[in-house]
Amino acid sequence: MKKLFAALIGTISLIAGPQPNIKSSIESVHGTEAILNTETAPIGSSAIVVHRFDEEHSTIVAGAEVVGKNRIKFKVFGALEQEALPSPKILPQKGDLVILNYLYDRGVIIAPDLKSYNYALSNHPEIEWMHPDLFAAQLAAYQNPAPTIEDFQKFCNDYSVGVVYFVLKNRGVLTDCQTLKPIHIESISPKAQKTKLPFYSRIKKIESSWFDFFGKSKIEDYYNYYTKLLELK
Image 1 (tube, helix red, strand yellow):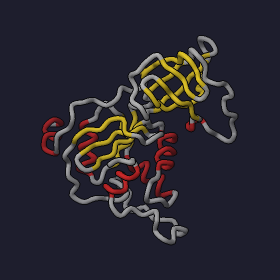
Image 2 (image 1 turned 180 degrees about the vertical axis):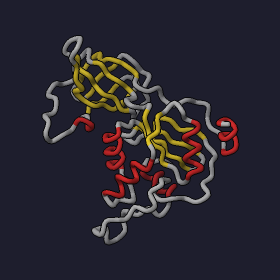
Image 3 (image 1 turned 30 degrees about the vertical axis):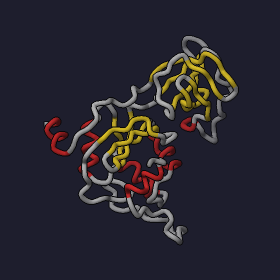
Image 4 (image 1 turned 90 degrees about the vertical axis):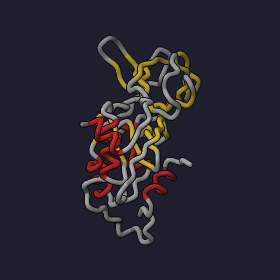
């Protein structure tokens, strides 16, 4: 039944997305960057750096973004940022564990309607998908019907999500949730019957804040908005 449903609503590339949670290690550190001993992660994907004190104790000391074949750039690991707690003061160093494609087995789907949402859902069972209602509810609480990169980052940190799958015209774009950079693009052919803004969810409507006098936070066209947000052509 699952295969029949996928055949009825479109076709999908047979190329699988990036493997989640790949372990590597730092070979050398150069300022805010480091060289790894692996070249398996796509440029733009996120990672975490883990420092081990002994066999039983370790801590995340930094986040990172893959900027080359075996090169990462350090950044603050936002998921651990709390005002009441001190941030780790340990700098990444040679030998530290690096987990590439961090949380790539957990994601959220941004789609224009239920049909295209189900399409992505049924064709990527390897990923644990959070329901878009959770993200829509968060946007509604902030009265923001046009999600920004920062909104996606906050949602992903709150719900431990690593990837966002965008259903666009004739293609599905899997992005890293922290950078929102494409890490896998595949050809698809589901056609939305009626586009729901800002994306498909069971939340009826997300109101704008009354501070938004000029309506800048409203989405006029689903496809144009997310194509520009992802800086795609």
